[in-house]
Length: 545
Ligand code: PEP
Ligand code: MG
Image (cartoon, rainbow, N blue to C red):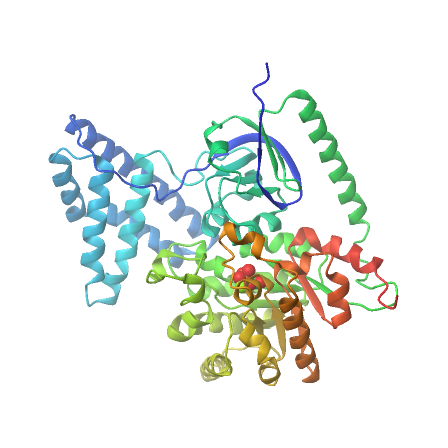
């Protein structure tokens, strides 16, 4: 008898896959306090986990020197030193000698030294607090045998209870055949990443799915219907194989549209650009035949590392994406950290409503040094292509004034040091809040272009947290209010001579392409797999009908 089991969730990206399951465990697993009888054995467990952590860090250190340079790699050297710190080790030995488990001893030492360092006046020392937390989490994960993504060394269906954007970004993309999560929302950044990776993804399958799995189970995933089949029988496998070959045929047909114009049957053309989630997607973006990059989510540079990316590190990444697009426009959005995209080293305070909290431009304006470092890197890179800079989460004229003033300061400093930069960098604003749409007539006089972030514009207009799966039935992405806000912004921006694009996920919604073209939207920016699909749609439309 077949042990096939069927589950159902919400499809995030319509593609199919069949493969082995990889059960992903989280780095930050909860630590329980237990008493152990064999203290010597517990000390040995700690020593082994510490040694493993040091060898992992050493490997990352060497790889980072090769890929990025020694300045950025230095942090991993510090992490190795912290693990060998005498006081830290003594503290752990003390807790172990009282008969507690090693995970608890490390967690306790982590809390104690984090607080101690955070309270120090010296900036350098207080910054080490986040490092202590980080290395301690690594040791705990190694004690539990739960290092992030470790063991993912063949193409697999990655299954987890939920995934954060940074966890998703850390995975080796070549090894991901599909994502299936027990929880999670279709509007999350993780869902966006899955779409851009061109792999099927299903969220909200439920806990029973996870308990039915073991590493090595086979799964068939249909990201369109939301069906996940564990240990599929032969008939099911046959159906999936047919689907996979039909998908391949469609890709071949789409490929014939390469090099063709994005033009409707009655002659209206539009730019179709590509969204890029950090450096790892630069290659895919350059190859998808887009008119340019409509959104480079720069925060992924911050999410992928363990500390702030230096100016040089950022400069290299921006230069790379500009060069790879060969003179086509590249819109780089300044840091949009906060809410679900968080990095520990920012040490953001816990908030009741993080989506309505300190995020994106608000962090940049309250921590201008972080912002200026990024702006400097951007202007320095601007001579390598056609750069446009875009500010996220704008809700007032004054925020734009402050951001522009900081850009002017940076340019003046570069002038004083004789550093070259392009004088033609366009500046733009994201329309992600209803406030920005409503005052778009005023904002339109301040900058060159706009791009509508429909993911956030939807959550803020409809008061629906995009991370909350319970709200999906209330979150009507075609809501009249959203369409009207986009249309109103479009008129205001065109009246002032600017251009407007859409870079939120609604740009991929082929049922709205005609409406966007009729409104006069100038550009649609989508993840790489959607560029040719959107071109096909545009070329099938006749707006005069
Ligand atoms: C948006 O909000 O639509 C957007 C493009 O930004 P992000 O999804 O990164 O918040
Ligand atoms: Mg947004």
